[in-house]
Length: 207
Image (cartoon, rainbow, N blue to C red; front, side, top):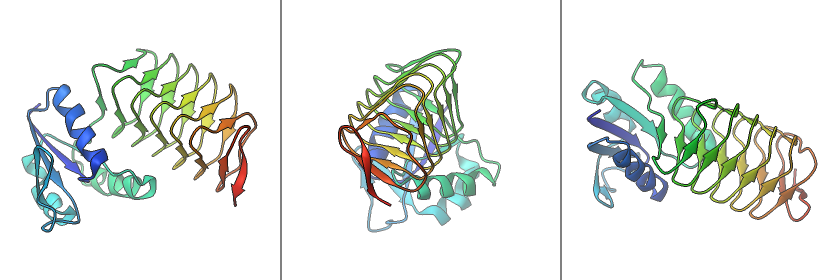
Protein backbone atom coordinates (compact mmCIF):
# COMPACT_ATOMS: atom_id res chain seq x y z
CA UNK A 1 0.00 0.00 0.00
CA UNK A 2 1.51 3.29 -1.04
CA UNK A 3 -0.50 5.96 -2.86
CA UNK A 4 -4.09 6.69 -1.85
CA UNK A 5 -6.37 9.25 -3.49
CA UNK A 6 -9.15 10.72 -1.36
CA UNK A 7 -12.02 12.51 -3.08
CA UNK A 8 -13.45 15.14 -0.73
CA UNK A 9 -11.30 17.48 1.36
CA UNK A 10 -13.70 18.51 4.13
CA UNK A 11 -13.11 18.01 7.84
CA UNK A 12 -14.54 14.52 7.35
CA UNK A 13 -11.90 13.93 4.69
CA UNK A 14 -9.21 14.94 7.15
CA UNK A 15 -10.30 12.17 9.55
CA UNK A 16 -10.41 9.71 6.65
CA UNK A 17 -6.83 10.65 5.75
CA UNK A 18 -5.70 10.20 9.33
CA UNK A 19 -7.42 6.80 9.42
CA UNK A 20 -5.71 5.88 6.15
CA UNK A 21 -2.30 6.68 7.60
CA UNK A 22 -3.13 4.51 10.62
CA UNK A 23 -3.85 1.74 8.08
CA UNK A 24 -0.35 2.17 6.58
CA UNK A 25 -1.22 4.26 3.53
CA UNK A 26 1.97 6.32 3.41
CA UNK A 27 1.24 8.74 0.56
CA UNK A 28 -2.19 10.40 0.70
CA UNK A 29 -3.40 13.07 -1.73
CA UNK A 30 -6.73 14.88 -1.83
CA UNK A 31 -8.97 15.77 -4.74
CA UNK A 32 -11.90 18.14 -4.33
CA UNK A 33 -14.16 20.02 -6.72
CA UNK A 34 -13.32 23.26 -4.84
CA UNK A 35 -9.77 23.01 -6.27
CA UNK A 36 -7.77 25.11 -7.22
CA UNK A 37 -9.19 27.54 -4.64
CA UNK A 38 -8.74 24.82 -2.03
CA UNK A 39 -5.06 23.87 -1.96
CA UNK A 40 -4.73 21.83 1.22
CA UNK A 41 -6.53 19.98 3.98
CA UNK A 42 -4.45 20.07 7.15
CA UNK A 43 -1.30 18.05 6.58
CA UNK A 44 -2.35 16.84 3.12
CA UNK A 45 -2.29 18.58 -0.28
CA UNK A 46 -5.34 19.04 -2.52
CA UNK A 47 -3.99 18.43 -6.01
CA UNK A 48 -7.02 18.44 -8.29
CA UNK A 49 -10.74 18.00 -8.77
CA UNK A 50 -12.78 14.97 -9.88
CA UNK A 51 -11.73 15.41 -13.52
CA UNK A 52 -8.05 15.48 -12.57
CA UNK A 53 -8.49 12.40 -10.41
CA UNK A 54 -10.12 10.50 -13.28
CA UNK A 55 -7.13 11.38 -15.47
CA UNK A 56 -4.64 10.27 -12.81
CA UNK A 57 -6.29 7.11 -11.48
CA UNK A 58 -3.47 4.96 -12.83
CA UNK A 59 -1.05 6.67 -10.41
CA UNK A 60 -2.84 5.43 -7.29
CA UNK A 61 -3.08 2.08 -5.57
CA UNK A 62 -6.51 2.90 -4.19
CA UNK A 63 -9.23 5.52 -3.96
CA UNK A 64 -11.73 6.37 -1.22
CA UNK A 65 -14.58 8.90 -1.32
CA UNK A 66 -14.66 11.11 1.78
CA UNK A 67 -17.80 13.16 1.23
CA UNK A 68 -20.27 13.43 4.10
CA UNK A 69 -23.36 13.94 1.93
CA UNK A 70 -24.70 10.43 1.40
CA UNK A 71 -26.15 11.00 -2.07
CA UNK A 72 -23.05 12.68 -3.45
CA UNK A 73 -20.71 10.13 -1.84
CA UNK A 74 -22.71 7.27 -3.33
CA UNK A 75 -22.79 8.81 -6.81
CA UNK A 76 -19.05 9.53 -6.79
CA UNK A 77 -18.26 6.03 -5.52
CA UNK A 78 -20.28 4.43 -8.34
CA UNK A 79 -18.66 6.75 -10.90
CA UNK A 80 -15.19 5.75 -9.75
CA UNK A 81 -16.05 2.08 -9.33
CA UNK A 82 -17.16 1.97 -12.97
CA UNK A 83 -13.60 2.85 -14.05
CA UNK A 84 -12.29 -0.37 -12.48
CA UNK A 85 -10.10 1.49 -9.97
CA UNK A 86 -9.40 -0.18 -6.61
CA UNK A 87 -11.91 1.28 -4.17
CA UNK A 88 -10.56 1.15 -0.63
CA UNK A 89 -12.29 0.15 2.62
CA UNK A 90 -10.65 1.65 5.70
CA UNK A 91 -11.00 0.21 9.21
CA UNK A 92 -9.15 2.12 11.90
CA UNK A 93 -6.97 -0.19 14.03
CA UNK A 94 -8.76 1.14 17.13
CA UNK A 95 -12.14 -0.04 15.78
CA UNK A 96 -13.52 -3.44 16.78
CA UNK A 97 -14.99 -5.34 13.84
CA UNK A 98 -16.08 -8.95 14.19
CA UNK A 99 -14.50 -11.34 11.72
CA UNK A 100 -18.08 -12.49 11.06
CA UNK A 101 -19.23 -9.01 9.99
CA UNK A 102 -19.18 -7.85 6.36
CA UNK A 103 -18.10 -4.30 5.48
CA UNK A 104 -18.94 -3.02 1.99
CA UNK A 105 -16.40 -1.63 -0.44
CA UNK A 106 -15.59 2.05 0.00
CA UNK A 107 -16.74 2.18 3.61
CA UNK A 108 -14.79 3.81 6.44
CA UNK A 109 -14.89 2.60 10.05
CA UNK A 110 -13.44 5.16 12.46
CA UNK A 111 -11.68 4.77 15.79
CA UNK A 112 -13.76 3.35 18.62
CA UNK A 113 -16.51 2.01 16.38
CA UNK A 114 -17.81 -1.49 17.14
CA UNK A 115 -19.32 -3.81 14.54
CA UNK A 116 -20.54 -7.11 15.95
CA UNK A 117 -21.06 -10.59 14.53
CA UNK A 118 -23.16 -11.04 11.37
CA UNK A 119 -23.67 -7.31 10.83
CA UNK A 120 -23.71 -6.45 7.13
CA UNK A 121 -22.70 -3.00 5.94
CA UNK A 122 -23.33 -1.76 2.39
CA UNK A 123 -21.12 0.14 -0.03
CA UNK A 124 -19.67 3.48 0.96
CA UNK A 125 -20.89 3.56 4.55
CA UNK A 126 -19.51 5.84 7.24
CA UNK A 127 -19.33 4.26 10.70
CA UNK A 128 -18.19 7.26 12.65
CA UNK A 129 -16.18 7.64 15.83
CA UNK A 130 -17.40 5.52 18.74
CA UNK A 131 -20.63 4.27 17.14
CA UNK A 132 -21.83 0.70 17.65
CA UNK A 133 -23.53 -1.66 15.22
CA UNK A 134 -24.71 -4.76 17.03
CA UNK A 135 -25.21 -8.32 15.84
CA UNK A 136 -27.28 -9.01 12.72
CA UNK A 137 -27.76 -5.37 11.75
CA UNK A 138 -28.11 -4.70 8.02
CA UNK A 139 -27.14 -1.27 6.66
CA UNK A 140 -27.80 -0.31 3.05
CA UNK A 141 -25.43 1.52 0.74
CA UNK A 142 -24.08 4.95 1.73
CA UNK A 143 -25.50 4.96 5.26
CA UNK A 144 -23.84 7.29 7.77
CA UNK A 145 -23.91 6.35 11.46
CA UNK A 146 -22.72 9.41 13.37
CA UNK A 147 -20.37 9.51 16.37
CA UNK A 148 -21.72 7.80 19.46
CA UNK A 149 -24.87 6.43 17.81
CA UNK A 150 -26.03 2.99 18.93
CA UNK A 151 -27.86 0.37 16.87
CA UNK A 152 -29.09 -2.64 18.85
CA UNK A 153 -29.26 -6.14 17.40
CA UNK A 154 -31.11 -6.85 14.18
CA UNK A 155 -31.69 -3.23 13.15
CA UNK A 156 -32.16 -2.59 9.43
CA UNK A 157 -31.29 0.78 7.87
CA UNK A 158 -32.12 1.61 4.26
CA UNK A 159 -29.74 3.15 1.75
CA UNK A 160 -28.65 6.78 2.04
CA UNK A 161 -29.98 7.14 5.59
CA UNK A 162 -28.25 9.17 8.28
CA UNK A 163 -28.28 8.25 11.98
CA UNK A 164 -27.53 11.40 14.00
CA UNK A 165 -24.92 11.85 16.69
CA UNK A 166 -25.76 10.04 19.91
CA UNK A 167 -28.99 8.52 18.56
CA UNK A 168 -30.11 5.07 19.71
CA UNK A 169 -32.19 2.50 17.85
CA UNK A 170 -34.05 -0.32 19.60
CA UNK A 171 -33.47 -3.91 18.52
CA UNK A 172 -35.20 -5.23 15.38
CA UNK A 173 -36.30 -1.77 14.22
CA UNK A 174 -36.55 -1.10 10.48
CA UNK A 175 -35.48 2.34 9.28
CA UNK A 176 -36.32 3.14 5.68
CA UNK A 177 -34.22 4.59 2.88
CA UNK A 178 -33.17 8.25 2.76
CA UNK A 179 -34.15 8.81 6.41
CA UNK A 180 -32.57 11.34 8.74
CA UNK A 181 -32.56 10.46 12.45
CA UNK A 182 -31.95 13.49 14.66
CA UNK A 183 -29.18 13.84 17.20
CA UNK A 184 -29.86 11.99 20.48
CA UNK A 185 -33.13 10.58 19.15
CA UNK A 186 -34.45 7.29 20.55
CA UNK A 187 -35.97 5.22 17.75
CA UNK A 188 -38.40 2.66 19.21
CA UNK A 189 -40.74 2.14 16.24
CA UNK A 190 -40.21 1.44 12.54
CA UNK A 191 -39.52 4.47 10.32
CA UNK A 192 -40.77 4.77 6.70
CA UNK A 193 -38.72 5.98 3.74
CA UNK A 194 -37.94 9.65 3.08
CA UNK A 195 -38.69 11.22 6.46
CA UNK A 196 -36.84 12.95 9.29
CA UNK A 197 -37.42 11.74 12.83
CA UNK A 198 -36.32 13.34 16.09
CA UNK A 199 -36.99 13.29 19.81
CA UNK A 200 -37.45 10.78 22.62
CA UNK A 201 -39.23 8.72 21.51
CA UNK A 202 -38.47 9.63 17.90
CA UNK A 203 -41.39 10.95 15.86
CA UNK A 204 -41.67 12.11 12.26
CA UNK A 205 -40.95 15.84 12.05
CA UNK A 206 -40.43 16.23 8.28
CA UNK A 207 -42.08 14.27 5.47
